Length: 100
Image (cartoon, rainbow, N blue to C red; front, side, top):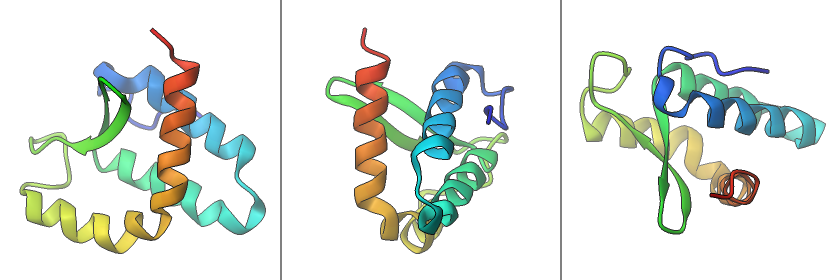
């Protein structure tokens, strides 16, 4: 699985790694999570590397589905928050894999 938004060059290689890891390691009962992450990336969710590792953040620009923080938070709360523990794990794994 590759990044569905290669036009977002800043973090495209990392998204490919993240989606490939999810596709490979998610158990069958968690396939919904893979689809949700893929969908959020299609909508413009970004990966940013901070001092402690990767975090997910939207950009509020024409490349993104979300125009405001509130729009993103509504979607985040509905779709991502139920998977918060899994998101933390996959971001930690990505941080280790892409060690600088």
